[in-house]
Length: 89
Figure 1: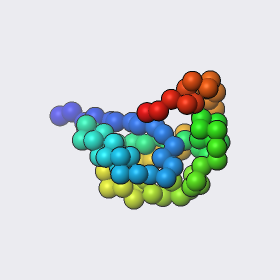
Figure 2 (figure 1 turned 90 degrees about the horizontal axis):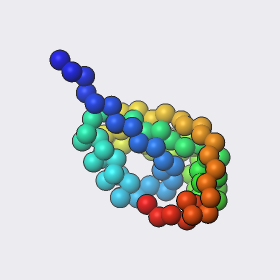
Figure 3 (figure 1 turned 60 degrees about the vertical axis):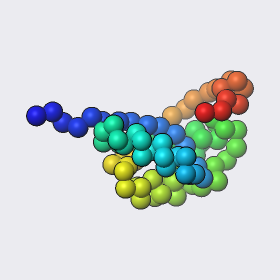
């Protein structure tokens, strides 16, 4: 018997909107969903501004979403050029 697929997504998930919840819902349909949650410093480095909500608040909210199996803090140091910073996803 095979174990369920592990699905991993990552992001800042600051000021979560319905489209973010829809993304998580669709990802969870593929398997057991884990979220790698960017630190405040990583989020600031990527977006160029401080997050609206602290890491603890963002983690709390994601843990409350029923289709998220687990949330893991991802302390990633990343540098992006202006093109990547201004890209819309």
